[in-house]
Figure (cartoon, rainbow, N blue to C red):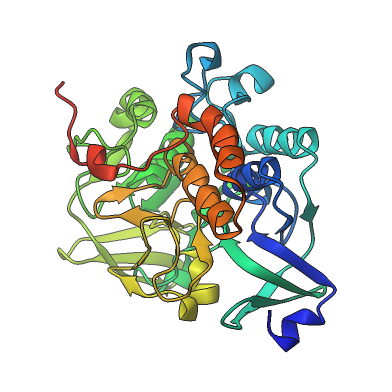
Length: 377
């Protein structure tokens, strides 16, 4: 430990940044391994989910299959189930945040809330985390901050004239009987469905043609839950494919949406921007190398640029395998925890005893070659 770190009162083996499903999930394993850790959270447990639109639900279904070694897809540990806890299949953001809060209380996780990480300094053999509260030091850092609080702002000119999906508290608050939705992946279709259900006329602008794209990996294709809902209202939606918005302007009291194929749309109300989210890694981008927008990681999800800095959550990618849903990235919690435990010289027997539960319940994916196959049918 270097001199600067030695005099930090808040020194931990591991500091985890973010108290969402990724932060809680990895924290639980570290706690079981007896590793001294703390989770730093800018707001409160599950705060990103609390910001979801009121009507938005999980696209991945929750179902209690834990007894049969098939844990709930939205669970962060093998022994819990949002379906069992919340008694619903597709929880809303508020409901899922309640599940996360109960998990944190049950496991008595060490969480410091209302602490915003301002910067992380790599001290070669340790880290110094400067925050809005106090200074923290650690041997390892796990970045577990999500994406929802970082909306994309560079998809087209005039984005500031639009209402981003992340700013919608409820679709009932959207003004007007006619609305334009820009972007047609999961958030775009969700906005279109909810607006159409309210009896509004919706224009949906898809830069691709996502309804036609069918792949077995849900990272690249719309979920069945979304397809089921869009079928019910598609006749009420003016759907434009292979149309990319280039400019939004405010002219004579109206919003003018210009596209790459020469089409122009006009709206009396703010268009809804559903072009997605940026990565929270912009806050620590100097500690990672990137390729095509994704951080370069080792086989243990450690930054290739900064040793002892690990990543968990929806920004993890290996090859074409994108771990952007909870049921995917939770399979890497134990991989990261195992590596840290080994570096801390936790006895192998103790490590394997803790990891047995995770391996037996499909919470441990080390061989990524299985991610390259398409389903047969």
